[in-house]
Image (cartoon, rainbow, N blue to C red; front, side, top):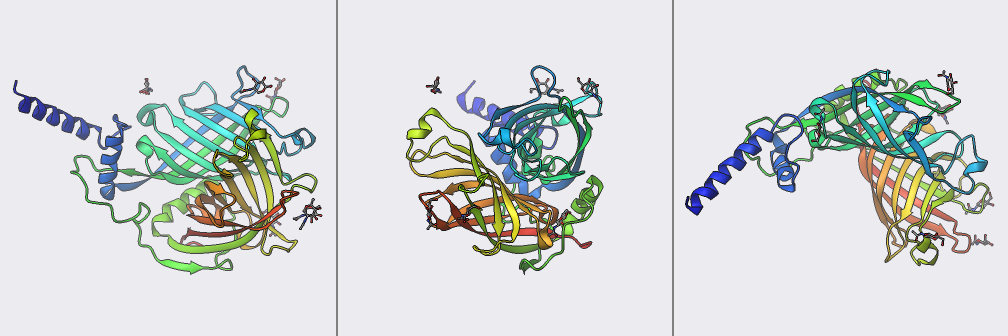
Length: 404
Ligand SMILES: *[C@@H]1O[C@H](CO)[C@@H](O)[C@H](O)[C@H]1NC(C)=O
Ligand SMILES: *[C@@H]1O[C@H](CO)[C@@H](O)[C@H](O)[C@H]1NC(C)=O
Ligand SMILES: *[C@@H]1O[C@H](CO)[C@@H](O)[C@H](O)[C@H]1NC(C)=O
Ligand SMILES: *[C@@H]1O[C@H](CO)[C@@H](O)[C@H](O)[C@H]1NC(C)=O
Ligand SMILES: *[C@@H]1O[C@H](CO)[C@@H](O)[C@H](O)[C@H]1NC(C)=O
Ligand SMILES: *[C@@H]1O[C@H](CO)[C@@H](O)[C@H](O)[C@H]1NC(C)=O
């Protein structure tokens, strides 16, 4: 065969493979080229509201346990009510029914850290890895808060892979079973999220000109903190689903919140505790390898006593060149109109820079589907004690449905 014919045959064969991969099940080809092709067709994609309901078996009394502590702070032992500073790793099976022998649909794999000094509440950074049936190999990424004693715990689904590329939505957890002696628990989980279906057989798309959340009419309003009203009273999975169904018609509101985060290391207990470090951290000028958990109060003014919320999460020094941390945090609002709502932050914080921009990747309550930016700057710093007051400017889009 001549070279040109071989090349043409290969090209035809590849084109057929690409067409087969479109539109159904996990894309067989997860190469960068296939992902690029998916994105080129994205402008024609249809958002599809998708619901999952399953049970998570966090059985710790078996060997090996489904979740286990991997790090803790020195003071964690003295705070048994909250376990503040305890970091766990989890790989728990997900099943269709409460019975652990019912059909396996996947695994919950990730980290959760107890991040409150006042209640049992964690920050969760989790991947949900689906192994059953048509979604085999696809994942959903979760970053949010789990206040474990609340009836319903709402958390953002901030992304996905495979069939769930660009997914965004809300998950709800509630305790189905708990053995207080062993700590074994089974969580009932409801996920509602948008994913994107590319119509099959579609030719290569045009250059995307809209952002992926741009499929509904967007009316941009600037809202200050006094707009909006309270956490939706009903946080049940049914209420969350109803809200997400109305999401395509929701009004997009630009929202600004400004406050100060107090990191006080001299009070007892301190707001920030070290949970892990490398051997080399002690001699590192940039504290490379230091992992800390924070529960720092937020106030409207730098000197005010009244707490409007907390920044609960972790930061890890991840640069050899400068003092810069990976920030993974929930902003939990406890006062005023946004009482009970949260924002999820995931970004970089080079602490000596004047302004540090950190993405807001999701939210709960009034801030469902939020996305935006938090700009952090140091308002006050005592280099002797290490105490700091950080000024934080959050600017983000949130979504208000007709019912609200
Ligand atoms: C899921 O995918 C993996 C790897 O591609 C494969 O080994 C496994 O058999 C699949 N499972 C199901 C239930 O399809
Ligand atoms: C909890 O676990 C203990 C120890 O294994 C067991 O004796 C007890 O029956 C369990 N309780 C429930 C409600 O399953
Ligand atoms: C830290 O807490 C201590 C004890 O509560 C207090 O005296 C001090 O003013 C606080 N420092 C800052 C910077 O807030
Ligand atoms: C850290 O230091 C301890 C004690 O000197 C040593 O046992 C351990 O192997 C070191 N770990 C690493 C990763 O170098
Ligand atoms: C915030 O909400 C909680 C729980 O719903 C409630 O107990 C608390 O009183 C509220 N706080 C404020 C300041 O409204
Ligand atoms: C800084 O912290 C040190 C040690 O806690 C304290 O003695 C000093 O007064 C603080 N300075 C300021 C400006 O707050």
